[in-house]
Image (cartoon, rainbow over all chains, first blue to last red; front, top):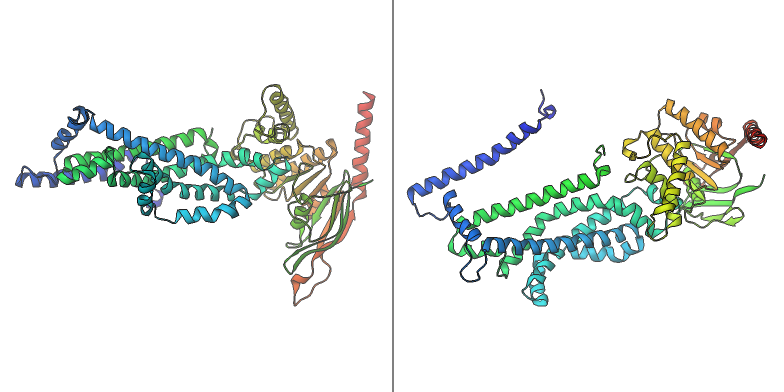
Amino acid sequence: MRWVNRQIGPSQRFALGAVPIALIVLFYLFMAAQRHAVNPADKILPLPGGMVQAVSALIFQPDPLSGNLLFWADTLASLQRLGLGLGIATLMALVVGLVLGVLPPMRATFGPLVTGIAVIPPIALLPILFIALGLGDTAKVALIVIGIAPVMIRDIAAHVTALPREQIIKAQTLGANSWQIMIRVALPQAMPRLLQALRLALGPAWVFLISAEAVASDVGLGYRIFLVRRYLSMDVIIPYVAWIAILAIVMDVTLAFLSKRMFGWAHGANH
Amino acid sequence: MSALLSLRDVWVEYGDKIVLEKVDLDVAAGSFVSIIGPSGAGKSSLLRLILGQEAPTRGQILLDGVPLAPECGPDRGVVFQRYSVFPHLTALGNTVFGLECAQSPLLARLFGGARRAAMAEATEMLAAVGLADSLHLYPAQLSGGMQQRLAIAQALIKRPRILLLDEPFGALDPGIRADMHALITRLWRDYALTIIMVTHDIREAFTLGTRVLALDKRRHDPHAPHRFGATAVYDLPLRDKAAQAAADTQSASETTGAS
């Protein structure tokens, strides 16, 4: 049978998907064991026991200086910044994208501005944000918003602009004005695309969050990773990176589920 | 019969390309006009003019004696070949949309008694086009023919003065197309509609229409083919059908009067 025709069942798919991950873990364990055989105090490739020990200290034992459980304080601080940034960016994408997509005069007026902002590398703006907004959470949230909002806006605006012209005409022959077309025709059809854009923006959002935290912060997942780097604490860095990956995957899966659940018509499912 | 729609010396030009030239046309209320012609003869341009999607370069279009604004409005309904229905609304939602827009300017949604009344009217309209069993299905779950039925119901609920059909049955297979012909003829009589239909199918044009307009170029310049536009080269009234329709309406009204 040709490979293009081989369909993989759910259980098989799970097993096949697990294989490369398991191989990488095994390879890592092999390399780590080798290094530890030579030097039991090796810090570059820590063994799982070492990682559990280091991270459980952060999870369960209050930091003597601040009295916080650092792992949870870091997670909370990062998720708060990320959530705020994603929320504001999503709202902006929806409102601005819709207005740009539906109303040609607005598109002509503000389209170039959005494009102009979108081509600026957001990290280049970080110093400006720190100077203008201080070193607190505002600058970090602002970086995430500036980083992902223009791309999301352009995506939503393009999607709305690409709605069949026939639909807009038909809505007008049914008596709809610009506002009604915006909220009843364009908005519902932009929603599935918005969740899709949000899913794609999660990656960049994490990049900007970690970058902002790395440069100036006193709590957060990115801050911790860059802090312990000074002591070569791979036993903290690797679990933290894995934790970030798990958080990102959970968000992505949740959004995909929500989109299918709420906008079944857009997924061709039998509702 | 009075002229519902009049085109006076209408020209459509895109740059130096002339699409339609000197179109003079009167459409009587209650007629079923089929427009045929070769590709590029401006059939769809003419439809877009009447729809208000485009303004004529020169000339005047009058609806009930009033010049037409170059914008679509609820007095002219339309069914396109595709994309006529909203994919995110159920059949009922699609049909009720026109009522919601008129009655609720701010939210375009109705609540309580007004909503129930609108739903009842929409349900009745859907039943009239044969979609009584598909009220809560999304367009993606409907076949092509059912989607066109839905598009017709959606347009008719606004009671448009003129219903414009842009190759509405072109994408359907022949069996379904025959059903749709029966449906549109019945609706045309029952609701006393004025219909203008663009079609590629000459047979369809003559079967359905009370009048057939053939658009083509009268003159042809081989060196600059784009400099002459198309106009109505044949205008064939099909008296029999008009008379038959009138007789049908008459007998229908007599029977209702007698009962």
